[in-house]
Each structure stands twice: as structure tokens, then as C-alpha cells.
Image (tube, rainbow, N blue to C red; front, side, top):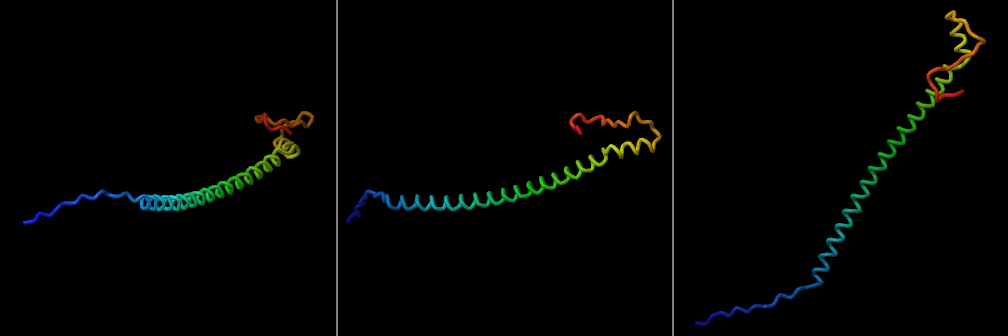
Amino acid sequence: MARAKLVKTKRIIRYDRIACLAATVAIICFISARTMLRTYNYSLSIKAGEKETTVREMKKTVSSLETEINKLEDRERVLAMIEEDGIKTNQNQVVILGDENHKK
């Protein structure tokens, strides 16, 4: 009876297949990273737009409040209120107390 011989073959490494696999993985990583970065950039631009809108609204509110404060601090208005309450004035001088930063 004849015995079958086992023939050991040396495995040949195919560098072109390894290079093709590495290129494929690199392309997939590049496409996925580009997609994720575009999505993240889009979400950041939406948030930035919301913040700019909020800042604009706050500036409008501050401007209207400053206008109202200036109207309420008007010298003639204050003198009229003082005279209505029966308080005597000294040479019609008005001094605003409490806000050292606000100078007229």
C-alpha cells in the first residue's frame, strides 16, 4: 500500500493584496472621518447661529432698557415728581445716587 506524501509548500506573501487592503481601509476611514466632520461642523454652525440670535436679542433688550432708564432719569421728570410729592427743592438740583458708573 502506498502512502500519501505530505508536501509542505512555503506560503508566499502577496504584498499587493496587503497594499490593496490597506488602501481600502484608508479610503473607508477617510470617507467616514470626512462625513463625521461635516456633520459636526454643520451642528456647530447651527449652534453659533442660535448664539448670535440670542446676543442680538439681548443687545436690543439692553438698548431698550438704557433708553427707559434715561427717560426715567430725566431732570424735568424728577423735579416734577418731587414737586407733586410736596418736597422742597434746593436750587432745582438733581443728584442720582446709587450708580457711580453712570455719569451724565
